[in-house]
Image 1 (cartoon, one colour):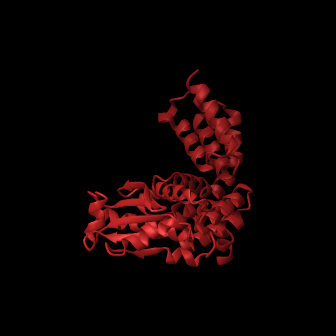
Image 2: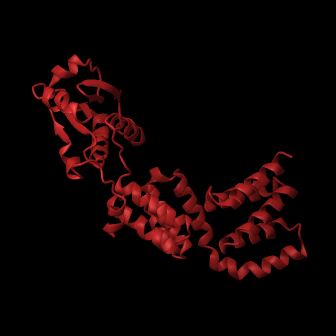
Image 3: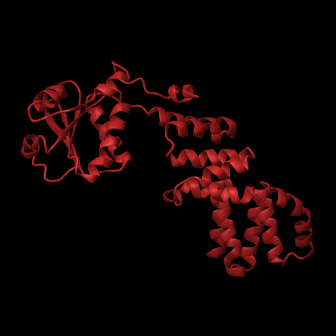
Length: 314
């Protein structure tokens, strides 16, 4: 399994991955000139001013170290404890921490303050590397996620599940990988395994778009067997009485449960077009839940949303 993660690892500049670990050092007022100013003549240097008592520093530090390590020597990270070495911080007029300065060719070229999101920190480091004519490729995890997404989009759900599972071995807290793994299992008919994954996610993941989509898909998949048994009866009821909205809603639910999504959308839109507020908006809400389950990339969702808008605003 580790081979899949390794396939996406960036080659990086000369020196390889070993340079990533060596590129993180501590500095003092006495060693700052050597570790930062002199070193920045050949490689961009990021200086993290921090202190043991600083809460945001504890959030920022590990993210900086992770991204710099993944950059494999394209940049260097120097950490300065301002309690132990207040001189340089004073010269640079650091008034609050965390404070991050970037040096290249002996002078400061960029800076930010506070604990930024990982995506912004990565962009900061990539821009710095480009000043030295270097490009930072995707991390092994990012490359693996790209492979998994490509496999999922190609409907190779077994391959996607294998890669998402491997990502979770390396990053157990990766909510996107967990949600996508659960969705892959649903596509493969392994509904119980999907439910276990989603049930173990933290509350903080409840509003994540991929988690919401996976849970919606799970709710339909869990009713697949029952839906298949009821399908014929419900179709007969609707054929006999096309205005039986409850029977049509149940039919749409059953159709979604066995993957007849286009038919389900048609039936739900039919109810909305006839009586949009019926049963406290039940048809529209069920339709939105189905859209969540299918995900934004499904062409049925785009078409269905356009048709829904046309009905609601006509």
